[in-house]
Amino acid sequence: MPGWKWALIGLGSLAGVAALAAAYGFVVWRSDALLQARHVPSPSAVRAATVPQATARGGHLIVVTACAGCHGEDLTGGMLTVAGSPVAAPNLTLATPRLSDAALDRAIRRGLKPDGTSELAMPSRAYAGFTDDEAAAIIGHLRELKPRGAALAQSKPGLFLRIELLLGLFRTATDSLAVARPPLDAGPQVAAGRHLAMIACGQCHGSDLDGGQGLPGPGLSVDGYYSRAQFHTLMRTGEAVGDGDMALMAHTARMSFSHFSDAEIDAIYDYLDARDRVQASKAGARP
Image 1 (cartoon, helix red, strand yellow):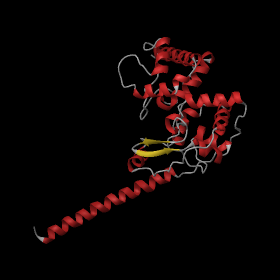
Image 2 (cartoon, one colour):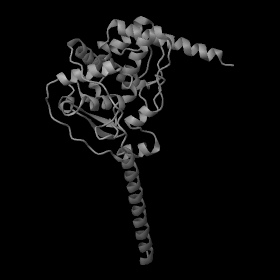
Image 3 (tube, one colour):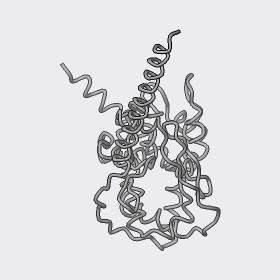
Image 4 (cartoon, helix red, strand yellow):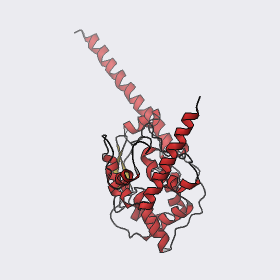
């Protein structure tokens, strides 16, 4: 092959490499702008509970809302994979003493770090449903934990996470919260179950419990699927009616939902049943 052809091939290869480098630089630059965006912290009047009954309630909420799923069973931290990138969920026994009550509240319910940037994987779209008293109880329980273990090193977001962020396929905690919708209101008689369903089930099934793109769980329904007894079995063991991959539900049930009281599971079932009937009524009323 003549030398000039080799030169053209070489120039083409260099141009391709340069284009890829420019594209990579743009992805990093633009995604960094999104990841490092500062949000105005909302005021918080929450103060850590100190009464034993309240802090015990906080411990119960930490368990049933699956905090251990990310932070480890002893809350000393864990590694997640988010859009192909390793993400460290911090050691809460070490992080809690360094943060104010307000900063902890904003991290839990608003998905904000102390510097005002967004958490990556905090499920604040569900945890936003915690009441002030519940947030105070959770923080109070965390403050009772003795520091142990080691701090986990934070890793930088990988290329796939950055691309998904730019394409809107992945949202940070604050961006997810901004578009979150509450579950359907099926009446005051099932309000307690609605609340529990949002804070415990909203992580996987969406804040509105309707499922959606990028969520591991489908829309929730019990009508025609689960009797009350079958629903109790599902929540305690993850054993579902019919086929399907229920590995995540089985793990969550054993780790978290099995700690719900019978009354709490009944409340969630009553809400989902009422929600099904309201949705069916609305669908039947359409022309």
